[in-house]
Every structure is written in C-alpha cells, then in structure tokens.
Image (cartoon, rainbow, N blue to C red):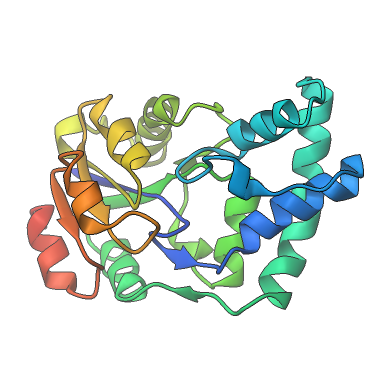
Length: 229
C-alpha cells in the first residue's frame, strides 16, 4: 500500500526533553574550541537551527563567522553532546510519544521523518540516547540550511525518494513546539501541529494559528483523528 500522509517531527521539546543537554554542549563546545565563556541565555535559540545558533554565537563574541569557525564549533559541540546527555539531569521521551511513534511507524499509509534544527549527527546522537532513532529513515536538518524555513522542501524531497511518492503539502503535517515550527510548515503549505511540551505555552502557540495544538501527545487517538489516520 502506498504512503499517502507525511508526518515530520521536530525533536527537542517535541519528542524529547533533555533538560538542557544540547544547550550545555553548545556552551561548553564553544569554550572548548575558542577559550571563551558562552551563555546561550543571551541568544534567542529556541526553534532555531544548530548552524544558525553557531553563527550567531560567533558574531555575538566578535569572532569571524567563517565556514572554518562554524565547522570547528559544530564539531566541538558534537564531541561534547554525548557526555552532556549522559552526565546531566536525566531527560526523557515526552508523554505519549513512544506509543505514537510506534503506531505511525507501523501504519500502512503514513510515512514519518524529521524536520529539525539539529544537525543530522546531533539528531542521531540525541535520539539514539533515548532509543528513538530507529523510527526515522529520512529528514531535513541544520546541515541543509541555517534557516529553518528552508528545510521543508528538503524533507519533502527525501520522503519522496524514500517512499517513491510525491507527498502533497496538503497531506503533510509538521509537528513542533515553537512558533518557528509552525512558520516553516506554513511556508510550504503544510498542515501544522503545535505541542506545548517545550518553552512556548499552548496560548502562545495558538496565537500563531497552527492547524491544531495539543498540551501534550498522551492521547494517541486524538492525534490520529487530527491527521485523518
């Protein structure tokens, strides 16, 4: 049976909560590479891509925003990330997510992938740590563009290549916990589902007019009804 519906997931604050492991890895990776203190509270990073964050942090500290510095910073971040996931406060897969991912994974008409601000390697490190990487065979990542609004077409193309189906935006659902997730879905004409398990409240998310909004995903049946599955 051909896949007809595409579901694209954000990671942080949507699938998992890592209690700041990624932020600490960004901060400590920067210090490790450049020998300067770094406080990401000075940056509006929520919903941004890793490549956008690195460029912004370099600029904030008066360092040249060169491909070499960006790559060095990202490598230091990726080297630091596994240790922060293991050593910091224990994170978790968010409520209802594992059951939902498993249900969609086995659904004959649904394809699911990632649309995330993480680098691909960062996404793999995080989701492997939480035993959820195996649900995803394709996605769009910060490697593709520093601008989140550019990622939708990359995800659609890879979904089509994987399943040999041209997924229409009207049958595509982009899921995330920030206004940036909603915006990147709207820009390609996709449906959007916002979830208030990150830093944005339900009311804040609803103000950006997603197709649907949830407090969390503990009600699998309600999610499936929303996407017509």
